[in-house]
Length: 470
Image (cartoon, rainbow, N blue to C red):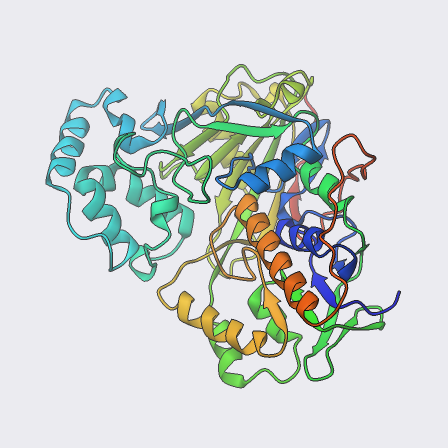
């Protein structure tokens, strides 16, 4: 293939969206054999799992139009719970703690909430939670939950992202509603409508959109980037030229394979912290008798902070004979191996929640580790990312996506940013005299690529008990 004006590295949500906007002007290289990144779907012993708990909801109309135009989608009301002292209450805790039977806990949360109202604009994330929600809500759920999720001293984290993620104490307090349009994200709540592919897993979305790319080359990863020569060398030794390069790789990875990066930028990027996540996948030999889709737990004896009952994501999955339950367990930064008894600990927790019964119900378990699960929003994150991106953009290299921007964003936000970047680059190329017609996006009625179940290139299987139930 001849050189093209724009090379895109990575066919996750951001890379695919960028490529769709670029049309014939760009080529997307993906190191894996299939697209999707951590939005891919796998099947384990007849049950469907996503690499991470996914559902679709967005404040971006163009992203909704794109997804619903590519895949038949199923919509339903979100059913999420918090697991507190052996009791399941509606999510979020700060709106529903009065459902708990402990009157002393309720009184403490009420008193703390009444006294809350300190400054939440600056400072750290722990201070934000205490000031906004009061001592009781913070102590009984939000602090232990976030410490379990982030495996990081919360005082080392910036709270700037919290307004988009942490629901308020009422539905009318300005941040307890998820905006459907206008591009502004606010937190999920208990009556939010969420969507999921009508058939298959979340990966169907990325597979369908990738099938509309004019130029996608899977199984081809970048090995070296020479900004001065505007060349990228792939792992198979082939070299391609570019006038613009878009990377969805993590910033430290991108800098490690780029020629001429100043040592101070390499050192700064090395300070960016990410959170590895273990995904414990439990295959149950029957339909799970609950409508719940998500459970959030701050309990110390339950290793998971989030439980995903994936087969409640659509009526198609509910009708399958085997159901999948996935527990998301944060590992400490830099940790590569989960506890050897992690699956057993998760099963104990699932039994306490009433999601599974005896051992005979469990067909098998599998543990996967995603080395990069969440970018940790430390206080120096903005400055580091700003400096790195400024150096790269002077050399025609642009970054977009969760770890390319070190931003705690969902797939839909990554798509929105990819679409915006693609439009911007297409306009620049038009100004330079290159042909840059707006690409036509195929409708759902036109042929599209089928989703191939992926090899687990970006998530490593670390344990599988191989058990079989009756």
